[in-house]
Length: 340
Image 1 (cartoon, helix red, strand yellow):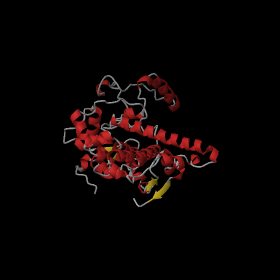
Image 2 (cartoon, one colour; image 1 turned 90 degrees about the vertical axis):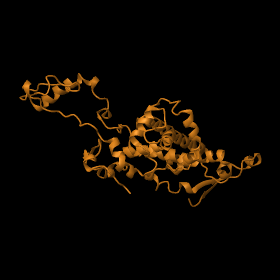
Image 3 (spheres, one colour; image 1 turned 180 degrees about the vertical axis):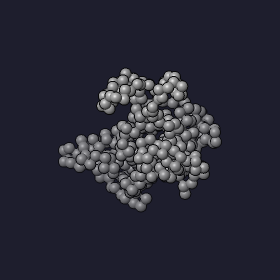
Image 4 (cartoon, one colour; image 1 turned 90 degrees about the horizontal axis):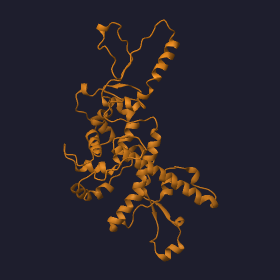
C-alpha cells in the first residue's frame, strides 16, 4: 500500500527531463518515473552490497559507515530494501530528485538604476544592451557571439544546472541500455555467484543448485543472437564473442554501482576506492549477514516477465572426476527446467 503522510503543500515538486515540469504530489509523477532513469538509479543502488550492509546496520542518525559519500547517499535514499519502488517514491524518493531552486530565466532589467535590485549583475549573469530596432535575426546572432566569450564558464552539462538532492546525467545513457546491463548483472549473481557462495559456505545445501556460464547467460538474455548458432567450424569463436559481450556488461554494471556509491550516476568512469569504508567492528558484524545477502532476489520487477523462468533453470552434470572428464564434454550437460 502506497501512503504519504506529508502535508499536500510539501508534496509539490519539480523534476527535470520529464513531460511536465511541476507536480502537485508524488503520485502524479510516479507513472513517468516508474520506468525512467530515476527508477534505474534505485535499481542499481539495490545491487550495492555495501549499501545494503549500511541499511542493515544503521539505526536512526547512527549511519554505520566511515565513507562520507555512502553516508550522504543513505541520508538521501534511506533503506530501499523494505519497500517497492512505488512505495519508496511516494514516501521519500520524489524529494531526492526534486529541484530545490528555480531555474534561472532571461528577464528584462529596468533601465532606471533606482528600480534595479542591484547595480551590477550577479556572478552567474551578464547584462546586455539590445537595440530593439535591429532585426530579430541580427540580435540573436550578436547575442550568440557575445555568449561565445563566456563559453569557458558555462555549464558543461545540463546536470550542472540541477539543484536536486541527487543529480544524474541522462544524455549519454538510454534506459534500455541500463536495463540490459542490470539484467546481465542480476542474472550472473543469481546463476553463478550465488551457487558459488553456497557451495563454498554451505556444502550440504549445494548438492543441487543452479549452474550456468557466461554464454548461457548471454543466450538467455538474447544479448547477441547472431552468436548463438553457426557452423561447427565457427561456433567456438561465436561463443567466445557472446562471453565477451556478457563480460563487458558485467564490467559496466560494476562501474555503475561503484560510481553510484560515490553519488554519481550513471557513469562508466573509474571511481576511487574506499579501503576503510567500515570499521573492524562493523566488518565483523557483516559476517553474520552474509547468508542473508545471498538470499536476496535483486532481479528488477521491470525484468520479471523476461526472466520469469530463470530461477527454474539449472544444469545437471555429473561430478567431475578424472574418469568423467575424459568422456563427458560440456556440451553434454542436460538442461532441466523445473518449477521455481
